[in-house]
Structure formats: C-alpha cells, structure tokens
Image 1: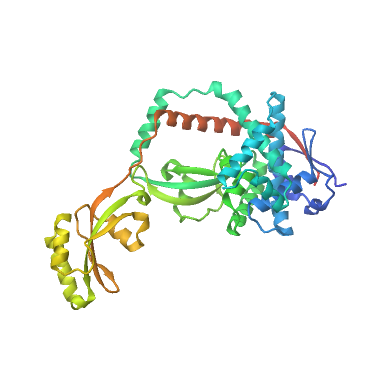
Image 2 (image 1 turned 180 degrees about the vertical axis):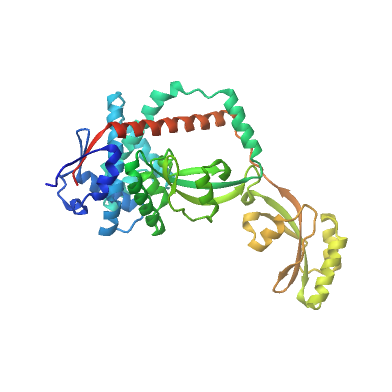
Amino acid sequence: MPRMTRVRAAALAAALLAAPVAALAQGVQSIAAIVNDDVISMFDLKSRIDLVVASGRLPDNVEMRQRIAPQVLRSLIDERLQLQEAKRRNITVTKSEIDLAMGDIERDNGLPKGGLKQLLREWGVHEDSLAEQLRANIAWQKLIRRQYRPTVNITSEEVDEALARIKASQGKEEVLLAEIVLSVDSVEEETTVRENAQRLVEQLHAGGAFDALARQFSQGATAAVGGDLGWVRPDEMDPALGAAVAQLRPGQVSDPVRTLAGFHIVGLRDRRLALTADPSRVRVSIDQIFLPASTGDAAARLDQAKKLRETVKGCADMAAAAKEVRSTRPAHLGTFQLKDLSAEMRQTVLALKVGELSEPVRLPDGLMLLMVCERDDPAPALPSREQVENGLLVQRLNMLSRRHLRDLRLASIVDVRV
C-alpha cells in the first residue's frame, strides 16, 4: 500500500500533483483519499473520471486520464466536505430531488425522459457518480439558503443604484461569457492550481466541452449552469479579466487569469451593445432599384445610381423611380429579419435610416440600390426591480458560499493515499 500522506486541505493540490498516477490502476476497493474519516475509493475516482471524459468530449486515453485525475479528486473532496457539512446541519436530499435535477439536465440537452440514464450506459459511466455529484450540489444549495438567506437584506437603495448602473450602460459594449473558476485558498496552492487551470485550457483547445468541464471542475457560483455568466460589461469586471476578454474573438477561450479569488478561464460567446436592439431580431421592409448590366457600361450605371440618390427622397418615390429606369426586378424586395440577409446586405441595411437610399451594391449582373421603408427594432426592456433584487441576492449568497467552502477546506484534514 502507498505511504499515507497526511495533509491539510490547503495543501491538497500539491499532494495531488505529486501522487503517482499508477494508483489509478489499483483495485476498486483501494482508497484514493480520506476526508475527515470519510473514504473516497479508487472506484469513486475512476467513475468520476469516466463521467468527465465522456461528458467533456475528451480523448479517452491514458494520458488524458492521468492529466485530469488530480482535478477530479479535488472536486470529489470538495463534494465530501459539502455533504459532511450538510449532514452536520441535518440537511438531506431525497431521490425525487435528484431525479428532478436529472430531468433538468435532460431538458437542457434535448434528451427524452430517461434519456440521460441511457446515455450514461452508452458511455459506460456509472450512474451513481452523477447522482452523488447532484446530491452534493443540492445539499450545498439548501445549506447556503438556510444558513445565510435570513441574514442577507437587499435594500431599496442598492436596487436603485443597480438600476442606475444598468441605465448608464446603454450603448456600451457587453460580452456574453462563460467561466471556469479554480480557487486558491493558500500560498501553497498557487503553483499547482495554475498548472491545473492550464491543463483545462489545453483540454478545451483539444475539443473539450466548456459547459461540461465547468460543471465538473469550476468552483465558481456558475458551475451548476455550465459556467454561464450571461451578458456582462468588461469595465465592471476585474481589470485582469477585462483585459483578457478584450483580446478574444467569439468562440475563443482565455489563458488562466489570476484574480483575488483564484484562476479564471473565460470563454467569449458574443459581443453586443447594452440595451440596444438585438440585430438578429430587427425586422426591415426593403425596397430596391436594380440597374442591370445590360443597360450600359459600368460608368453609366454608376452615374445613373448617383442621380437616383439625389432625386429619390423616400419610399413613395421608389416604385416610380424603378419604373423610370426600367428596373428588371420588383420595387418591393420584401420584409426580412436582418439575420436572414447576406453579410453584405446586412451591413448596408444597418447603416441606413428609414427612407434613405443606399450606395450602390455591386452584383455580378448589375447594381442594386436599397431603401429601408419600415424598421422594427425590439429594444430590450430594463429588468424589473424584483429581477435586480434577486440578482443582487444571488451574488451575495454566492460570495458567502465561496467563503464557507474555503473555511471548510482550511479546517479539514485530508489523507491522500494515491
């Protein structure tokens, strides 16, 4: 049997890094770690690695399993600490609550009822590994709500200030982000947590699913929703995170970024301007004048287009102008959502005011001039006071949750045996 190493939770990461990977091949009854006298078996560790590899779409090979083993064991230890604390406070989780959570996963992933268990069987993943993860998450959320919700009071002034900040953000850039957060609770953990974060980035670059890896490894409040942060303003983020996001294009993932909380990995999904219409939802009614190549040389067509831009002053003039220049296409092009137009047409239409004739758009068979006759911009509404208050409450509870788990780690004794 490997020599037992007795470490405090704060030094756990270093112990995991030094752990011989060959231990993963030990029998299922062997012990991976003991958390306050609660055993995590090698079978528990292997089952969770199976789940991470399958759900995260990671390569299923010895090298990948070796690389993620320390991260997986750390997650299992945190779950044991959460379940132990829940038990100490007489908090229980029923089978029906776990079944409901599994149903939520099925719905979010478009699976039929019972489809998740079938998928786990196809992956060769033991169902109990996911169930235990859900049990720990549900128990912890119950504990945080029960212990801290009565102490958190969101004032009317705080809601007013939050609404004022939201209104002031109109027209400023927002980014749609996802995150993975790896906490650092002590100086001893710094190097190892950074290395674990870098491994996660490498796994994401290799095709790993961000949401699945966030659910398995992130210690942030968004882990349960796959790391989804929603729309946030870069100037309201930690400066280091804001600088990292500024370098990303949609679909890219940052390198690990150090903040006071630990190491963050952020994935950029999209960019937009706050409290402005979503271009994908804008509907426009478009008229056109088409000047076919057969009507003369290129210079003559451009001159004709220039005269049309000087004389056509609104949609009421379009049909007559099209008839006058013998346009070979109907004056009314149709009504469209901007997202359904070609990139070039979308860029042209976005720049137009209603009733303004565009610069000529070059086509293989002639020139086209466009005019927006109607535009429906469904501008997003401000959140309600209740929504803002709930958002502030969630932020406050998430902060208290991180502190509580950090204190449990620091006060616990963990024996790593791999």
